[in-house]
Length: 113
Image (spheres, rainbow, N blue to C red):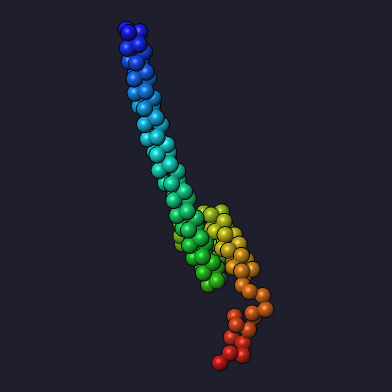
């Protein structure tokens, strides 16, 4: 009888320890998932800000402002402005390829009233 009650007590302790360990692992997993969401959210926000800055650089370039002057006006290095210019040009090329083919009349005013 004594051996059986000792084994029952041992099983109870092991189950409790396992439950504590599982709770701890679940909490850690939840924290890691929350941090991963923070990372992905920050990267997405950075990407949107980058595209927005590149669009602004494109508008300045459209006003015949040089890369050097854009950098000076914005407090950015010429290297950073050049990078944003590349992002803008890439986005423009991607946007142009997204337009439907054979629909030039719609984009330039064509024959529509």
